Length: 175
Image (cartoon, rainbow, N blue to C red; front, side, top):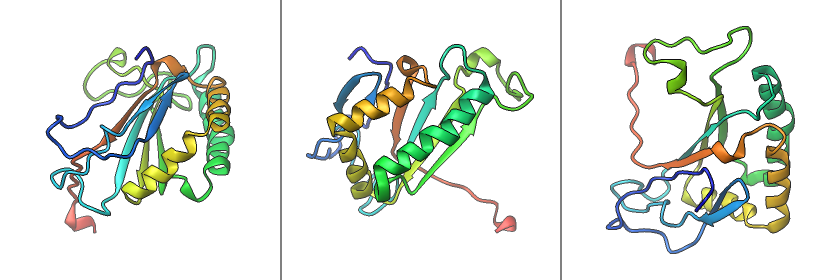
């Protein structure tokens, strides 16, 4: 695989899904079936699935232009093409925005974090993720997404990962 996508999965001993699901980055497409794990230790039936996407803006775009395109062109296109299979939520965390030229680091350096956005996509369950991914399989849809992403993303650096064993801790005093 020559694309910039790096995906991580449980070891081959896990129970992998038989159905193929496609993901994309650049113009390279490949099967994700080995990445969607159905082992009870990772996902129980009907548990939510989450995908993280790490994106870098296209060279020449300011952080504001990048954010504007993502919010006002790309997201409406996604909603239009995916319809009711759009992720349950698609949250974007912009690393650089507004008047801040670099993110405010508590630990680390700006060079440690090359991304301009981290997007968290949440799907109701495995079937929802599979239905959404099936839409990407259509050749014309792939071309539309690729052309759109070329307008604002450095597609060669795009990273995507399906999260497995997700845990959450909450401050009960604030609930």
